[in-house]
Image 1 (cartoon, helix red, strand yellow):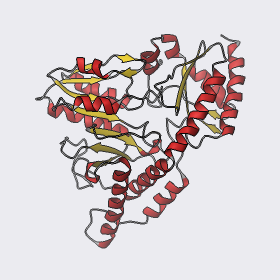
Image 2: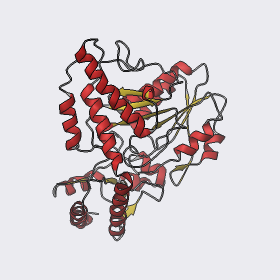
Image 3: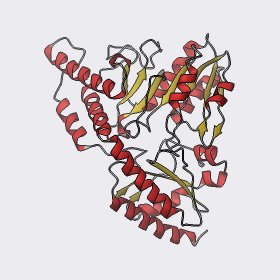
Length: 371
């Protein structure tokens, strides 16, 4: 099997799974006062401190959620409580569906949503500042787009937004964690999921600066924080911390490996006359988006699947027939309708790349006959 759909989800690392199994023996509720509960709470606190140290944030700024979708919804829906400060929100056309859905909810409540112009997929800080108004209360921009790999200058954007004290700056950093280095000091709120960096599904983090108050999406009952209720999942939290630590152990070396594979793929795929490379110089190497003219993405996907090669069309959470992200980047509807995503990781091998290229060539030649 050749798996190149790491941006959708990653297989669980064996060490992470072992941590989950060991932590599952901590049977006490972390909020219980007896020694079993205290033991579980100590493990959670140690895990939280480890996560905080890796990301250079404070332990009390970590809120555990079921994943990035919940984290995104928590932040955006909480903005309804800030409408006395303003009802204007700025975002981009490169966001995840778990951003757009709650934004639509707020729009129906009377909020105004503006989309900042993009230049080669990038948000230009001066262009963003031009559309800020006295009514702006939230800016939400993902650090890395899940379909094209475009990396936004989050640190620069956050620095500029510091001038506007009532604006909350949120970033979905799901596709960045464990792949690239970044700094959250100028970000107010950030979301991510463990299953994107070889952790388990069902656990994520909402980073929130300690001086920012948000209305919880889930209320009722004590937890690790007042901003998200529910019994803390000790084993999931411990496994998330382990996955995060492992993902940063050799991050520079892993990045260079992924970049090598990305460049090789682009070199080989550029030789096909009907193939266009959509990801550009602003994309991280872990995500390579291409379009194959005249061939439906799902047709190519299933053709590759016959050789046990697994890629993706759009984001796994997308429901659109054409990629909104590719359209925003290329301004080409044909490319948006025929795009596929190849996502690489530190676990990708030379054999994976070789098998993909062989299967792609076979599928391309077979499908080209019908174009």
